[in-house]
Length: 327
Image (cartoon, rainbow, N blue to C red; front, side):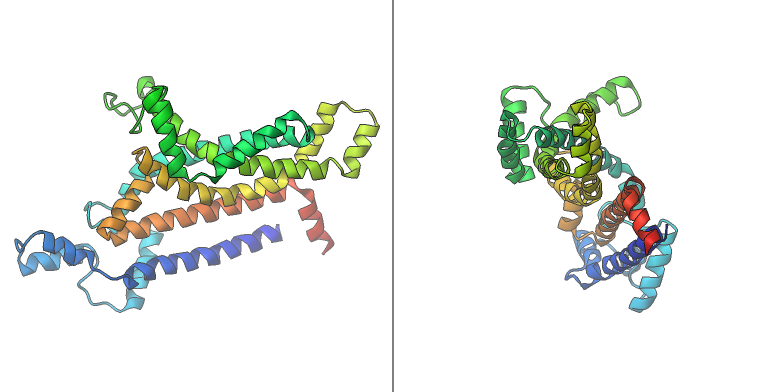
């Protein structure tokens, strides 16, 4: 338990550093989005209206940086991420409406790629040297392709040429958003191709990692002893896979960070709603509050996933607990 407490303390410090950097970086960047917004009004505002706009978005008070930082941290503690300059809505409300699309996309792709990749890795590691190894170069080739390039190929061939999948959007525009089965089925249908592009790009990493661990594990003494006792091959493979999967569980959290960055490009290619589209629009419009909210959300999500992976690894691997007791 002390190990988890130390890990949690480390993640708290990392989160504080990320929050501080998230506060400072936009303020060090050139440009002023408030002035750009006022310039777009083309002189149709009075000085009183300009001051009201600056106060609305937290500017115009001439406060020291330390005071601004204190207000920023206390606002975060109350769930206040500021107000978007371009959308004129609270950032928390904007992210709350878009984050579920990204969570569904990343979560489904991560679970499918992990399950399929580790299962194939167990099979390929147990039957190493067989004809099944021809799948490995093909999967490695798909992993080398950028997300946006692979997504474009899938759209052109499977959606444009074969018409197997819908091309763009997250659901059929004719559907009314709600909890009806027709709308849910439309969301699942439109999400198949974006999820497929992420799974194909990340499958080789899980497969190769699990295969290498299986090759190492099946040469261990406990596996050789199980084979010598005449246990069924399927049971021996299961015991070997339970020990070989532990590093993959630890790497799952690290992979989520790469999937988040990859999903941003996938959302752009497939015109899929989510944090990716928000990020591109926020960068183009220099919408600092929205940028801060997105970066903070992504950072805390990756940190939380890493802590959950550490906790799961601590629970699954008794050697981590026994080593702490011995010390």
